[in-house]
Image (cartoon, rainbow, N blue to C red; front, top):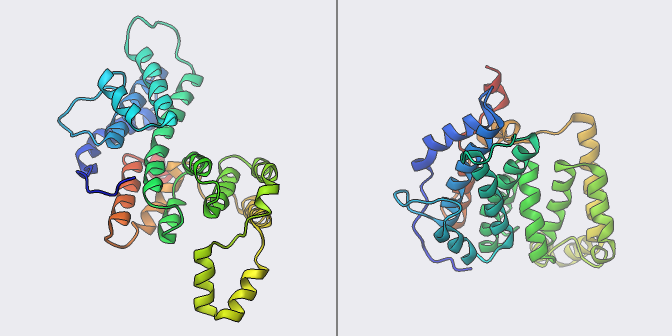
Length: 294
């Protein structure tokens, strides 16, 4: 994917709008399910504006031929399906010819597809900048809700099955988004492949040798576990910690305080600035559990 300069999406242009939409969809008591889905559809339109980098003054609707054509240009079934689904559900909640009840299942499906669009922003980013090439970015990526990380990493793993950093983080995302049993099952299903993969990448090997010297570095590398053992060990350790202390955060509302306390990734490279902008965008309008209690 090209790293050519393109017009930068301005989060601030949409801050007030997204604040209102997120507040109405997720934090306003008494709003109908029909109203929630309609607001989520509007949220999705803003996310798609960022994905397609649409100028603020230009119109965009999810179901228009022009929008569908631009989405198809991304050549991503995951994105196309999500846009189609949320447009279909949103249309039912804004057009008066649909008179049936909107259920909790409809609301959940709308949220799931909105989260798919969130994940696509990160998927596209990590197709541009290799996942794991900047460890500080990976650390900040972990400040997102587990389900967003899971959706992103699952897609990336299917595309880059040899990237051990993705494998390691995906197994932990499954644990945190779902449970220990599901994470271990995912690992066991790939046991034969993972046992052939070293847990230390070539780049990491070079760094270890540069820091420790040839002899000690090679010894460290030889004693490192394969990816199967590494994943099982990490999942069990984190699962034990969760059992004893609970999960740090499971959604935007419980994660935002950690995100705000750590702040953006430091640096001014295009890679860092683009990542920080995406993170800021994903947290637009979100309130902490503390704020919601006040």
